[in-house]
Length: 265
Image 1 (tube, one colour):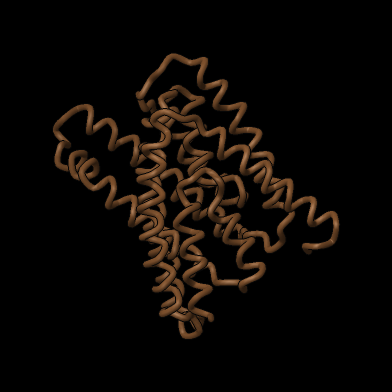
Image 2 (cartoon, rainbow, N blue to C red):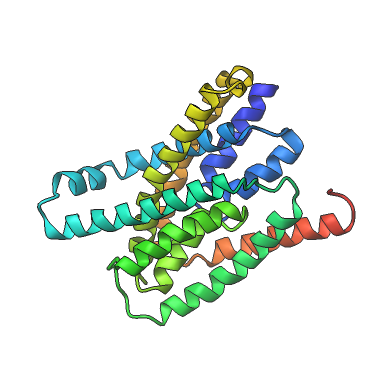
C-alpha cells in the first residue's frame, strides 16, 4: 500500500509539474492525506518530470549547444544561463534564511485562487501586445526571479508564473514563452535535486530515506510528465490557458470552503 501511494504521488507530480496548476501545491495537499514526504523526496520526483522535458526538448537542447557559433543560439543560451544563475543564487539565499514550505492547506488554497485570477488577467493583457517570440534579457532576469517566487509560495505554479511573466514582459507568443520557461526549469531542477541528494547522503537523514519508494515515484513521474507535456505543447498551439485558471479558482475555492466548514484542517 505504501508503494501504491508513491505511484499516486508520482502521477500527481508528473501531471501537474508543467501544467500551470502547481505541482508543489498538489503534492502538499496529497501528502496531507497520504503522509508527509521529505524535501529530498519532493524535489527528486520533480526531477523525474524534468527528465521527461529533457527528452522532449533533446533536439532543441543539442541544437543550442552544438550551434554555439550561431549568434541567435548563443544569445538564447546566454539568457537561459542568466535566468538559471539568478534562480540558483536566490535559491541559496532562501535556503540560508531557513525558509520552509507550509504544512497547512490554507495558504496553498489562496495561492491557487489568486494565481488563477492573475493568469486570466495576465493572458488578456499579453494578448494586447504584438505577437513576439523574442526572449529579451529583461524576460530572462524576470523568469529567474519568478522561479524563486513560485518556490517560496506553493500553489502559485513555477511553470505558470514563469510563462506569464515572460508573456507580460514581451514574449507574448505562448509557445515561445512556454519553451523558455521549460528549458530554464531543466538545469534548475537538476541542480536542486543534486543539492538535496548530496545533503541527504552526507547527513543522518539518508539512512531513513526510502530510496525504493523515491525511485518508484521518480519513474512514474517521468512517464506521466512526458505524456502531460506532449499534450500541453499541442494544446497551447490553439488554446488559451483559461481552462487551467478556472480549474485553479474552482479547486482553491473548494478547499477554502471545506476549510471553512471544518472538513479540512
